[in-house]
Length: 164
Image (cartoon, rainbow, N blue to C red; front, side, top):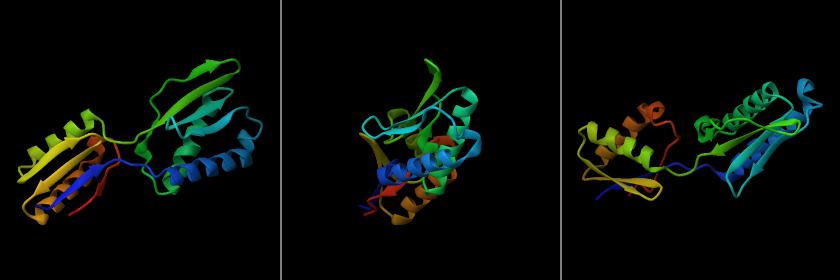
């Protein structure tokens, strides 16, 4: 029976390249040249730390980072900017989470979209992925097209792997 997996992964090397180019741009921009703080990638915690003197400059750092992530070919929705800014000393810090894996709420949304489509497939949530199987490969391709159309509703970048 044909099947494929729906996953949400971010290539760590591509993300590191995007952060490094954002740091280089930060060093060359005239309006941010004398800024204390900067951009730091924490690979183990899968977060990016933005810090600067005020929240306006932190917002500029967000824009630089997002632009570089998109230019590296990653989906901009893989970054979660929803965390609040925190003041520590003279710096304002913001932690940006990198979304990896599909959480249970998102997998429920995906399975609900698949079920509402009335296409004869079977979707199962497994750890951080969703496995979809069907009798025909054409049905699986319809599901992929459906999920790509509704990508904004899901709010997370999806990849389709292990097509068998």
